[in-house]
Structures are given as structure tokens and as C-alpha cells.
Length: 95
Image 1 (cartoon, rainbow, N blue to C red):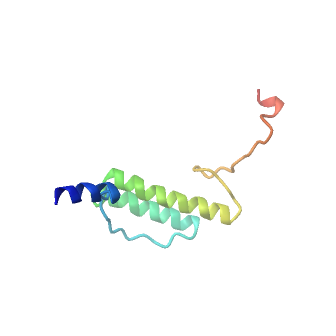
Image 2: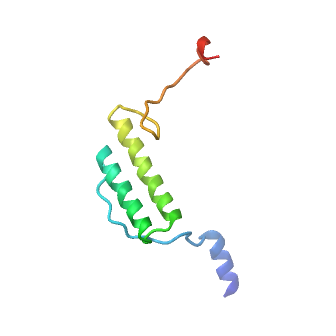
Image 3: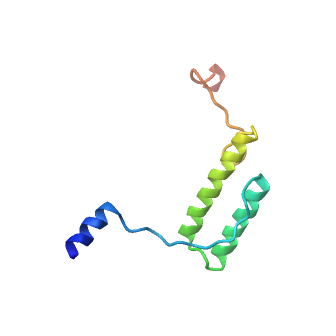
């Protein structure tokens, strides 16, 4: 029986973390992203989420924020600044 546990443990690793329930809005706009992040912060501050869980949920919300930014054509990095792509190296005045 122990051998079966070892084999299954390698094929199907144990889940890291736990399933959580968190009431979040549908995240379809930048305003929804702000609301969702506020819910994560509140859940962490009252102890419903650990800091590690809050980081994991925030990463998912950040991915959605980037998808929204790409769809609406604004692009943007994590701070909301436009993303600049330089092809062919740096411009001469950047040195």
C-alpha cells in the first residue's frame, strides 16, 4: 500500500496550498481590477487569506489587468505606463 502512495505521489503530486473562497467581482474593466484588489487586501487584513495566498490571487488579477489593457489597446506595464518597445538597439541619445 505504501508503494502505491509513493508512485501516485510522483504521478499526481499533492496540491500546494488550499482552495479558498473569495467574493470577487467579474474583472472586465480597470475599475473592476481595483475593486478586486481591494477585496484581496481586505481578506488578507482580516485573516481570511494568508499573505502568500493574497500574492497568488493578486497575480491572477494582474494577469487579467494586462489582458484588459491589451484588449483596449492601452498596453501598459504593472504601473499602467505605456510599454515601449525598442527594436534594433538603443537610440543614440540613450547612451
